Image (cartoon, rainbow, N blue to C red; front, top):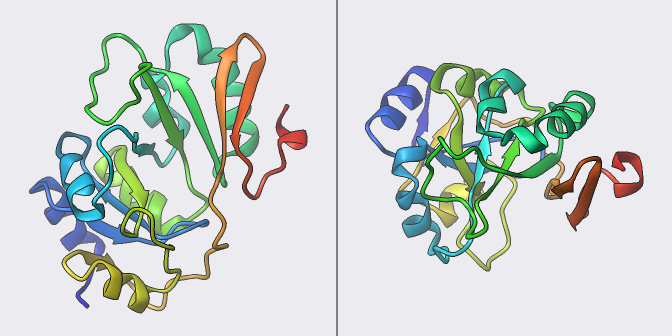
Length: 193
């Protein structure tokens, strides 16, 4: 298990390498968006499954949101972020990412983790997924995560703050003022819509 500092993490990410860090929900594997194929390879993840774009603040990610969904996105984001909520929205035509869904939507999240947000403030938004082999349970502590994905460095310091162990609630924008529940996590849908 190799523990790296934020400075080392920034260097690795710029070189196209992934890292693992804590979030408020589950540990995440992350890389710069242009290198997202590495996450699919390491996790053995189906290329048809989208990744999440993780930001540190709304201003970092708002330009990815199609104008039709922008007002709804901003209203929900300002109420629940940082926190355990992923918003799936139509992506702007001028944005190109190779890990979005086939219907041109993108999941975006800002975690309630100072460690994660501090890193992402420096790097810009990152392509992310839970730090596990696809189909297997996600470990919550650094040592177990490192055993699951031994070739990926972990952002220190250790021990990590405790994460909830529950995935984020995921909602998808349908039309003005209307969201559809994809997965209920820590935030009940009744509190969102």
